[in-house]
Length: 148
Image 1 (cartoon, rainbow, N blue to C red):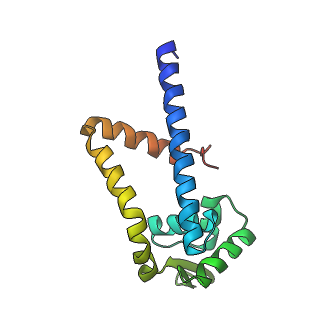
Image 2: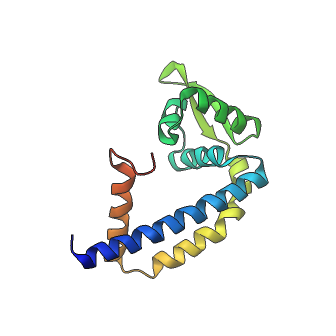
């Protein structure tokens, strides 16, 4: 790695760390306002991204034990953000789904952040967006997932 590339990588890593820290603190604030902790809220985000999941899948994504995920799902269900249903493909397991009406109440909280992110992304040409997308796909799908 050249000195110039190393400097760019270090600068990028610093900016990513700032971004992650700010997102975590924002989500902690949102979670506090709606009665959820950060882990609960992130698991809810996983569900909104995926549409539905088994408790085991959620536990894997969140790096939690299945017992820990049960506690998270109990809180999410108690606050009305998710429902647990029988898995039609395997009657021994469950499918967890977010409750759309509850999610609609959160839309206003995230709308301005989404719009701001959209404006930043709109400032990049298609070719650069492809590089950014490739970066996130690689970091999200690597066997040594950076987040876990």
